[in-house]
Amino acid sequence: MKSAQPPQSPPAGVPGLPPLLLAWLTWGLLASLYFVGYFQRVAPAVMVDELMRDFSIAATMLGNLSAIYFYTYAAMQIPSGLLADAVGPRRVGTAAAVVAVIGIVLFSQADTLWMATLGRGLVGASVAVAFVACMKLAGHWFPANRFATVTGISLLIGNLGGVLAGVPLSEAVAGIGWRMAMLISAGVTLVLAAAVWLWVRDDPSERGYASHAHPEALNTAAMSPWRSLKLVVSERDTWPLFFAGGLIAAPVLTFAGLWGVPYLVQVHGLERSHAAGFTTTMLLGFAVGGPLLGALSDRIGRRKLPYLGATLVHALGWVGFLLIDNLSAMALYLLFAAIGFSAGGLIIGFAFVREVNHPGAAGTVGGVVNMAVLGFAAIQQSAMGWVLDRNWRGAMIEGARIYDAAAYHAAFLWLAISALGAVLAVALTRETHCRLRFDADE
Image (cartoon, rainbow, N blue to C red):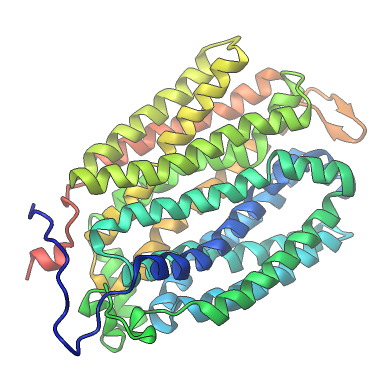
């Protein structure tokens, strides 16, 4: 790998690269939509009893209501990538935020299950563009050898939204109700939509600076949506990274995003806010692990080794959670932190898969891989609700079903199986040494 060269002043009359502060402000504002999306993603975890009661549903239907976000999110990933490549992150991000506002309002005011499902589906479909658009924007505003670091920070920002949907949202639900809490989040999202439109620019050239993007990424006319998608799906190394991302993320999004809080309340007898603190620890680990593991990968110039190490730790964490009984509160906090931190390794996968594909298809490849991340989570959330209902022994409190330890254990077994599958998928990848293969082949 070539050693880093010190930055040089551009010739007279040639625009320089954008200031780092401007790059972070531009990219960070768009990334705030990912914060909103993550908040909406995991919010049902602290509203389980209220949703079951208000809509008279059991675990399977609640799993489906939560998972519709993931299904529509996953379904929109490839279209989001194509749109980001074709019309740019600014326009796509602004329109998506407006649609998200409509979905959140529908969900918060729903008096029937179908309306709640429609609202949540709209939210998932709209915020689906946020992460893909962030990656597309990062390729223009930051150098290629910092892509995993920047993408990792987007995961940090997103997970901070997940943290807000933990204890703070739990307290808000108890104080003002889940419907009002959702309405407030809709207002915040509308403000962000306006800010993205007014400030964000797709490329530094729109502000008079040189771009970090590869020339092929700037030549959008040469890359039709169909060709972009065809290149990505025909690339052999896309697929191990597709499965790796989905299989490592799904357990965290399933546990912290829906079933972890009711498990800790019903099996361990914790208060809801206390239980949310445990799942928040997992999300905080996830948030921190993304940028740190991404930066480590950038620093050592390797993708496969750190990604494989992260998936191994993640799988061992879930196996330990299933096999070790009577963990102390401190041990459980540490275990959840380790599980979340290691799951942050999926950020390496986004940089990895970008490097094995054509640079003009950067948005499309991000959408393809992110489809697995959310799609697999949707399947797991619904499937685990089905397993819980199959093992339900008839207990109910105030209209909400109560599941015992054996039912949760049967459901959580699939989290460990998923994590082990991620190890196998990463093992099948080929190292890129943090370089675009498109350049290596020239």
